[in-house]
Length: 307
Image 1 (cartoon, helix red, strand yellow):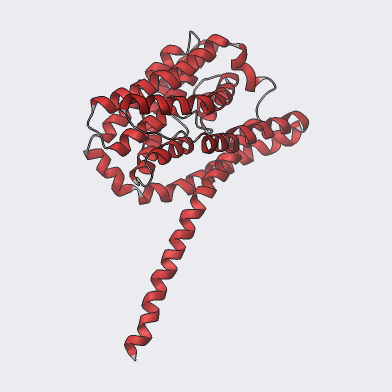
Image 2: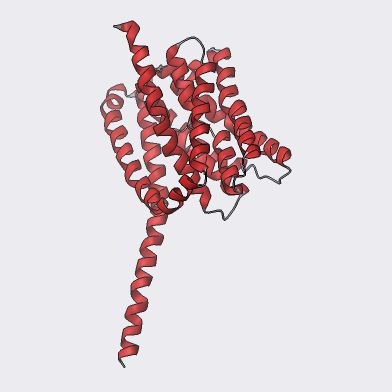
């Protein structure tokens, strides 16, 4: 009798725990998407008229930006994959990162580092639109070079880019144009709220991926990601042109990419690989740390002329 009485209790608790974990795993992506939408909307609400299309009036800067992000870094990722004996999941994740556009939360960091708002915001728009065309071509090209069958997933990529970048940005810009007082009042609040929500959503993912991340430190993945981020900073800085602010914007954009798009590309080409999410999130953290000295150096240098 005791065994029969205890059996339902023993079964019920794990069931609740499993249901709780499942619910959390479903809520985390929703929270991340909501935080990004909020922050990009706030960015749009702070955007001045004409900033979103600035880069389209500067064709040389536009071409160098696409070359830096979507050509040079894809080649760098392919060369790293060919030169080192990496696991397939890591190779796929690295190339997916190189193909992806600017992360939607980056312009704020670029502006704080001394970049111009017009270039940072218009680069976000241009890179997002261009990636809808460039990403499938890059995926197919890499697959041809490595003799692998690849999946572009253009529908999935387009939906991520539209929902997480273009839609909230232009909604925020519309609010700024038609209700400037409201936009000025709510933009800082929404930006802070989105940042807090993103931190709360990403922390559980990083904690659960700790074991995998520690494995990366010992098997060379950490060195590869550091090298990739450093090369991105150098390439972007060199192709950014003579203006220090533009160099800073492009350097940060070239070394850091949209994790949602990277996950979509990687997941389509290596379904079932659990390490993909960890590699892409790990790159996000590594890239932010690697960029800190660069940001401090060039923020100081960009402030010198105005003093």
